[in-house]
Image: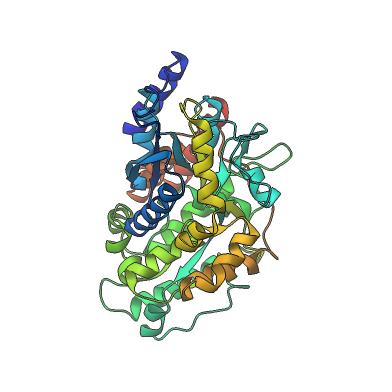
Length: 425
């Protein structure tokens, strides 16, 4: 409900022509930029270190930091936009960039002096364009995959299979076996059915897309049914805990979550997020491809791990561009950030950080390199009008898992929610 209110407020404020706050030029001639992002304590600490470095090299710019957690980030950002008080530089996600872009919130980064993205892979850079306009500078590559805590696997006496051939049925059986061989409260797989991104990857494995481009096949009712069947089968087999426990775990920060405390063997994530979980769990973790459906092809895909975007209403766009350039291309900044926000999209920065990565960082970097031989064309960014889709997805799947509606009704409601997004866009 909060997201609906915030999204509505954002739309109304932009229609009324809301503008940003007063220009932040200080008495000493410096300017103040506001920088916001989502993340955990590790990300916050690293970002603070980088901003200290930026301040030292750019004494004419002060930076006010506004970190937050994912669970409340988008509500806050929408409210700030609605009030004409959005930060100058903001972390932007694939699920939101088209919506914010088409509402005129984000600056066109093309041609901004001080921001040089010429060394970035064009295929990655393209993911930051909405209707041909570059409104997000991709930070790096994220690949949706299975993170593995090998200590939990070994303690259960289980051997990992070849991830080039495993299926969702294999994954279910393996996870259930780990649950059975583990102490009470430890599971093979922490959760499935709480993230809308999962349905997108199921669809892609059936050569369908949740939000198809022209010429691509829309997600089918059969695929939505198969996905819901898989979610329930995981729980009923004991591969995952009860759906109530999964919901509770989904709301926890990383350092108290099941996977972050060594109480599950597997977790689905965009692969560089593994490092935060590994730090919390104190483990050297592994990465595996997604399980496949009957076709045997997991259809792995690159995704911009996140973007840096600039407010179209920033009083200081040139200085904001300098800050984004520093975050993406400065070698000393890269040595601090490493791959925490994704394997850097700029090859020279990858080479710069490689010798400095710990075992988990090396795993993330090498996994991204290895997967380039098998990745498929990435999906288009989530279209405008999808602001409520994630909430609708959650509502529908929860209604199904709590037996308030049957599988077929839930699958149809998922498709209806997707169609509503297309209509709103």
